[in-house]
Image (cartoon, rainbow, N blue to C red):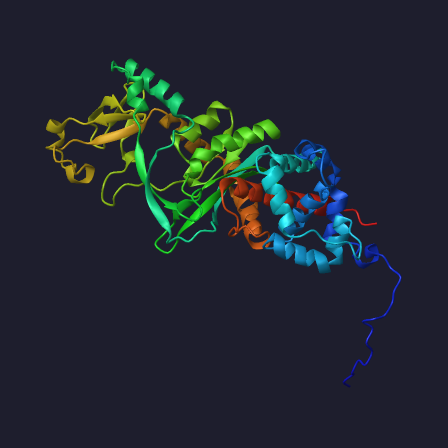
Length: 449
């Protein structure tokens, strides 16, 4: 039987508090119980003047950003609109029914005047991480590293082409030193410093809207200006550190600084798992020399179909040479400034070889194989890859770092950004990951009354 509700209780008077309107198990209650937000006051004390009008409470400002990033609200303007009508958000901020909500531009002005040149958001991130550690929830023996692209607030068709100097890689000095030692051991002259100092240039597309973003090409359909959010997580999915770079910076350049951050703020990991983009001689060298177990995947050989692969040529460590499938020797020739030893065959022997067409297309009938001076570290990582321990660690990537990025994009607004510039994107990264850590901490430690 249809019922028509004729009662209108919109103007009914009630005696109640905001606390009564917030459900007992609402997420804001869990967040409030998880951590004492007063830790923010000493962090920002030096950023405020002792003169002038009273400011908006800095804890309220930071809590407003947590509302935005925890609940995945797309902007501060929309967050303020939600706070005006949502009693749970008002309760979280300590507001009453009629407390005036700050204007949406308040946080932006405070960022420009106070927070922009500080590391306040990184400090907040690591303070929450410390709370997680103190409660025994962190499991950082195994660390999982990856990156994801965040679409920049920039039109991909508006750009200038520009020549820029290639960046020096973090391991460059170490590589230069070791390859010169290798050359001397092989009776070659070491490269002079000016050989390495020669500037190398490349042409890039620079956005006219957001020059600090990087042009990212994944395939024919995915070409855009973007930023890369590089992150490290523990075995339970807590984010341990993060770095933001333009979208055209290769993933492998950021593994050492990420691991250094984890060592400095948390602990030295026993193992690091990363995908194929990180499987380079420099990274294998870095991890093994720091006595960290590399958990790296299988990568397909890049040999042309119908030709012998590099695995078909056997390296003889004692005589420092390669043996081809016919048992002929490829002798050491030189070590390049990129750190590769070159081994070459004897053309007079190869010209009569029945397998020449499967070996090389060289016009002078000479086979060339390159071996990095740190190749043995890659081979050691390959040995570890076959162990059950490393297989188990690597398999957990999908439950840790990959799930973190998926949640960040689907639930916390990280698929694209409305902000511009590396500093602001770094703020977004630290607040997003801090919000995700806090949310997990709050959920796991919640004890209903």
